[in-house]
Length: 445
Image (cartoon, rainbow, N blue to C red):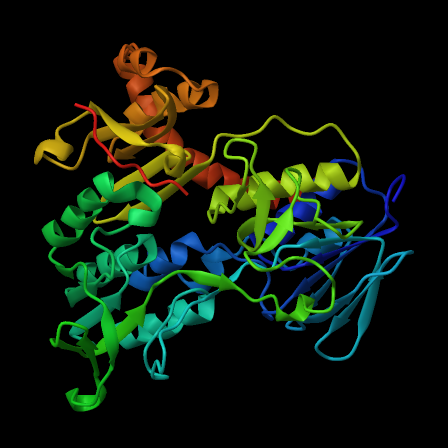
């Protein structure tokens, strides 16, 4: 493809798809844009689903990322509630078939379909998962009458659901197959701090506990599970939060590698398929840092990758790479991660005493590889974490990180507000733009 595409087809109407459409227009695309979505809803924000929506603080309308007029304003034709079922590549463009039999022809395609919630074998229909707005509303309805909840999975989603349920006064039991909660995100050294948040927040936590299956015996329409060690756990309701999986069977005849997500180059170009890009949870981009591929399944990554891919579609100047960032709000505290913890091979405490048994709040630690800081994680320490963003971006040494000077009290206050404001402002920008693995293995003392 040379010059501007005449028609860009975006498959996936979540944050990544919306952001791609906005960035294409912002970068000067004059051609047509079509947006295809499996859900009938307009794009909405997923992070509040396990928090504000689940607690009842927010109604569904507050999660909207785009209003009804957004797509008219940026010149995008939508096909919502009509998922893609096949992609047929061609020399002069690609044909996308939709569930209703309609076809779209585009000379550029961006895939941003995200994930679907994983389930357990033989999972009963009344056991919840949480991925979509409808999932959140169904679980919220269940929690209105439940007095106990079983949460399978102690990652960020499971912990956020547990936190929301505890605010309702519901007894919560959390079952995690790994030895530490949130180990995929935080690693085995900092994962136990997330576990302390659960137990100190009133949840009963079982780690290293594998589920053998669902069993009969729960009274009143509840849920019972058998653990591999022979114990049974029961609750009025249950939710399974064990991550998501890309649903890629619709690409079976496209001739591309989807074994670990859609394999892409470092700007989202799909390997082996000219004129196709993939972003967000569904894509694994080539990773110069590790020499392999990487999938960063977080809110900020979808927006960052959309910006890169949109500009690459137009052969425009690419933005500077952003430092990966994610967060989780649970039990009145914000966990934040800057950078790539999985690249570290040791953990170095920077602030606080959580790793020594002291309070979790205020604990900050660096993930280090070859004496270079590759990531920083903090627990209720926004003003501290913010100081380390430039150091992570620069790959600073541990000694440089350790002597990072402290800001003034006024700067502390601004830094403490910045992550919350950044999250909020990024959401606002979606609307305003429309109108215009190695796990760490040691702790260093």
